[in-house]
Image (cartoon, rainbow, N blue to C red; front, side, top):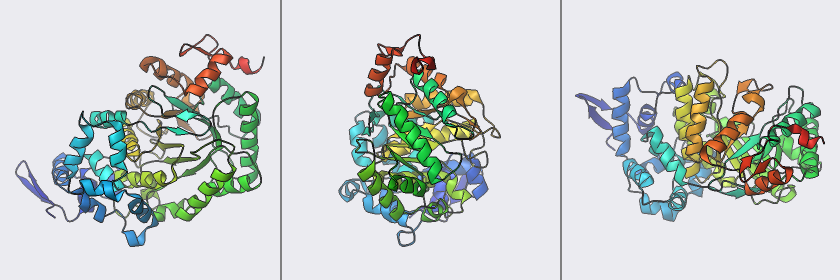
Length: 454
């Protein structure tokens, strides 16, 4: 395989595919930290020229971690639709990109194509795309799932209500939940990150959310974002649970650092399918984020985009209800500033959608990152234009427990109004019955949690 290119009179020869993929990536502080980033823009262009000419079969035969060494690789490769891949195996990455962006190719065709691609193939295409390309391609694809409500329909934009509390206080959780619901947040899910990852705390939170949502007949889903093993034990004890959650990584080594394995996820998926209090058929919620494999030394010398794509290859095996990248949460070691966060968010959303996933995004940043509210709002508008399934919804966009900045109830209401988007059909009907929405628009009661107290 020829891995050489000449740019502006300079000749570049790359030693292997791993190097080409890393140096073709947009600048990310995590890739610099890992020693896989291009030294300058000229080398980046040379790597992209080489990558553009590589056939898809070569990417499939050279995964980020060898098939015989990594169970994530084995799952991704074994799940590929071999008939579909056979039709495109000799395409170059450039030809794949052109096909994805063609006006003659619709979203259903892309979903079928995606089932025949490995994660490395999808990541390679993303590296040859501009931000506008990523928006254009992702906007074609709709991935619709159902638990108690229907997520991902065209013209709909949903919100995970995130009523976290510093002490898991029930009154505090419910106060945030009621305020968020009154703004139209929570149609994707009401999901709480627990302060303490214990079975008792998980049960208490899920029982609280279950009683509240059923008392008010709210057509949504609930979950507690404890470790999957904690949730499994809660479920064994008879705890009500609509959706089961887990964070994922893109290699077996990094998954082990998260305390998970393919077999554990299979067991969890089977258990929640049998015992969930939602109607399904989609029961899992996964979170990801560029850089987690580097932090656990499980990246095998590959860049953040490739490893993130592999998270989506793992996720799609379980037909999840929702998936999101927590794009700016890990910190400046991996994504240094607002520009890098924006690029990563657009990459992740596109790659997830082409994998056939119901992708959302936690549009966020940490307080020690070179980013601010303007960066957050810019990316929110870009992703909403790209057809993202959901964002997070927090009081004032400030998570008092996790100590980071994300999208607020007001941000999400504004996105809907600006782009003519609406919540899930079931949730919109509930809001109309509550007097909170009429004709697709919020009423004067929006933001008034008193509707739950009268």
